Image 1: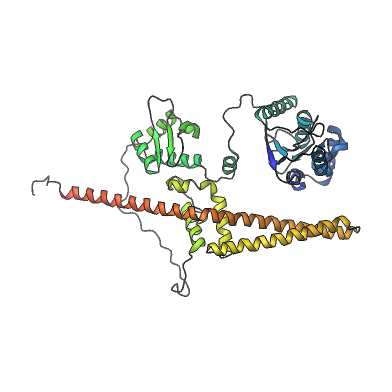
Image 2: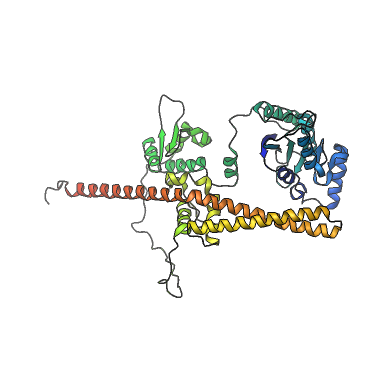
Amino acid sequence: MAVCEIWDVRGRLDHPIDYAGNPEKTANPKYTEADLQAMVDVMEYATNKDKTEQRYFVTGVNCDPTTARDEMMIAKAQWNDTSEIVCYHGFQSFKHGEVTPEQAHEVGVKLAEKMWGDRFQVIVATHLNTNCLHNHFVVNAVSFTDGKHYHDNKANLRLLRQRSDGLCREYSLSVIEHPSGRKKPYALYQAEKQGRPTRDNVARQAVDEAISKSYTLKDFDRIMAEMGYRVSFDPNRKYWTIIGKGWQRPKRLYKLGEDYTNDRIMERISKNSYAVKFSRFTDPPKQVKVYRLKGSLSGATKIGGLRGLYLHYCYRLGILPKNKKQNYARLHHLLKDDLMKMEAIAKETRLLCRNHIDTAEQLLSYKGSLETEMSALLEKRKKLYSKSRTAKDEDTKAEVKVELSDISKRLSTIRKEVRLCEGIAARSDTLKEKLATIRADEEQQRKELMKNEHRRRSGRTNRPNELGGI
């Protein structure tokens, strides 16, 4: 079974090529030097050895892997291409344990030759750094034969998958005969893969909690409403639906999984017993931990500004405190909207705390210092590139290469922090508004609870004496 996908790349051409051919990913740490040489022998037998960097399972189709970027740029210059799309980056992932590295790479090269080999330059790299072997394809957006562009449309994606399935059958690999459902968004896929909360995960958590506390559908509906969800049990519709506050449209419950179909929910609720549960009149006292602190807290200052805002929002969102199991189903619906952004918010919080940034002026100043440093490094890197081209001594070239590598790493860090600063500037006002709305909603809920409690107690005092004054 092989899963295929491809997408366009805008910007610098060397980034996807460097990623696809990264030796840390294509070199297999489980193999010794002797094993790698044996793999080289297999690659020489299975593929065209004149075009293969066998040691790292990198092959060029219509180009040499070591000069692929330059060859692709020459093709673009030859046909005067000025498109924003510089190349296409695709992958072909195999089922765990189904193929060897040699087979995976051979299938990938054949697929590239069948799909693009007559008109385009392609780099094929097999990555061995995960449990599921997978091929990466870097395809020049411009044909070297006629200067026409490759188009990433549904027809070409369908053709790519059909040819991949054909090769899988040829190599006796499993194939998904009847794929169902639409493609899952990449951000959602990554969030689920990394175990981060998503809208579906939080909805499942809410449904599970409601079912565990319900004896009837009415109980289930009431508890779901308390958590900010509305469930529709319309008898005229085949499937029950759920919609949360802030959702644009309802979602069919069965799409959350096998345990969330109409029949399965009723079955799970029916297993809850009405039997009386006996418990102690008083629970044993909990052991209280006592901590002794040196000094006084009288001089402690409260963290405010941007740091305080982000730290408080992280606490409300469940990022803080760390290692605490969070019940995301009980979050306010405005907080649920940001669950997919937890990683970005956490990074922005760390930047603010690390640099003690509390005001918008300090944030702007810090961003300015980063941009100034970035300009100086770019100018220095430009001079080093010129020095590397003119240097004749190999030692000098090696030193320049190391210095260039250090500058590139620092530039990467600076660019990330600049993006974080921009994110903080754009997000901070929104966070303030959300927290203000959440506090207002919580205050309204508190008042309603107190009002209901007052009514309940008033009703008891006004009730007539059933014992007739005895």
